Amino acid sequence: MYSADIAAVWLTLKLATVVTALLLVIGTPVAWWLARTQSAFKGAIGAIVALPLVLPPTVLGFYMLVAMGPKGPIGQFTEALGLGLLPFTFPGLVIASVFYSLPFVVQPIQNAFEAMGDRPLEVAATLRASPWDAFWSVAVPLAKPGFLSGAILGFAHTVGEFGIVLMIGGNVPDKTRVVSVQIYDHVEALEYTQAHWLAGGMVLFSFIVLMTLYTFNPARRKSA
Amino acid sequence: MTFKITAKFRVDRGNFSLDVDLSLPGRGITALFGHSGSGKTTCLRAMAGLERAPDAYFALGNEVWQDETQRYFVPTYRRAIGVVFQEASLFPHLSVRANMAFGRRRATTAAARFALPEIAGLLGIDHLLDRSPKQLSGGERQRVAIARALLADPKILLMDEPLAALDLKRKLEILPYLERLHRELAIPIIYVSHAPEEVARLADHLVLLDEGRVVASGPLNNVLSRIDLPATFADDAGVVVETLVAEHEIDELTRLEFCGGKIYVSRRHEPVGTPLRCRIHARDVSLALTPQLHSSILNCVHAIVVDLAPTDTPGHVLVKLDVTGAPLLARITKRSADNLGICPGLALSAQIKAVALLA
Image: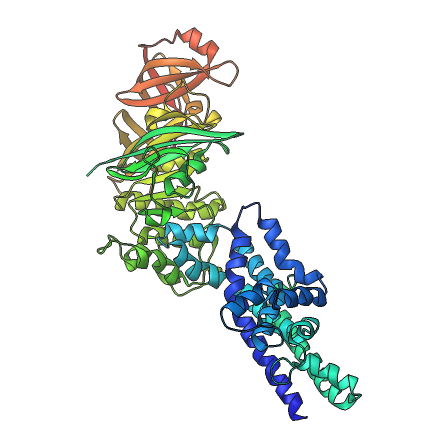
């Protein structure tokens, strides 16, 4: 393998790890709210979270590029903070990926919270656990399979993305050139051997991830 | 130390409304009895703070937990309650011991009245502590749930049909433990049920609910012996008699004594002096103007007619009797009542054809 390929693999893993960690932090309260709210906005928020499931990544990438650009709200905000512009940087790629993979993390966790029902939390309250205490000591342990599914799917989905990377990240070595982009480059250059190495690796990786998920977590197959 | 439990709840949800104003004894078992939809579970959930009624007052003695006139509401997790639901609802990710310790660790009282080994012994679950809830039978799970609730050091135990989800065998397995709680722990229990036999066996105080309203509230026998109430217990109308085992006689009969006389039953295993609760159905009591000497019915007591009223059974009346202070109900035909000239104040002889022992 070329060192460029190794750099791309390394960057991909780094991106997926950071994105998964952020998704668990952001996705958990969103999933909790969606699972338990009776607000009229539940449908709207749920739909917004699920949008990346149906939209072409290029559409999402295009709007994010505009928003993060010098005239977009996010771009003006980051420039005001002195951070510069986000497109074609690693942090920009992270933010775009978080949006793009959000439903893959939120939905399994939300399903797990919904399947749990009110009863365990009511029982916890009758046993003197405050809502915050009950969330950590009862809800999170009971929803563990959902968290596991969400983390694995979020990670795998981030590893596999292409369109949004190309729109937001472009093709900057060591910064935004992830495996999927590197494969594209190889194919463009007719370097089929190298493309085979990376593409085959991706197939194997995805297979192992899904097999792990289905073998150890059969109950959540539907949400996957 | 005796105190009163004051509960006023008003809920209006279109097709369902609850409007109760109760003053309950701060000791013993109070049964909330009614059919499904009568509001008994809503009442219990409101006491637990799991539902916030818009117009409510709830206090244990001087300790107020809800007073909506002051917009005061203590959330569930700050109330010293124990709740046992119909399904045991044990935490599946914790062992039996950890389930029991869950509330114990969070209870605010420094010196708990109950220790884990003591409660485990009381409920007969010592040998199950290291198991997972999945490995327990339905009856065992419910006993663990009761132990878990008690270990949180509650000032009141709320039970929502704790036996309804169990088959008869499991029910019979748990009932003695509930009676033990009643005897050995000085903690008031509110017990929601729609099963007359459970109420007759366990309750000291009975609240009858119907469509969200209190139909009657009072000591068990006072309510059971009222003949002016709609037939809540229907065919099961009858009273409960508290007796003591007096003697085991040679012909395989045991003599029980109560304030109104004696009752013979098949030989019991309980030693002399044991209190036994019996249930006497109105349909099992017949009346005669003179003691029947030439009859196979052994149990016969002197009684005075207090009142009579028609029942739901066509052609029958319910007669309320006083047996030296103990109430008794008899269901006889209207025709017999007329023939015998039954009216309040008449002294007669009541024959008890069958006695159900509640133990």
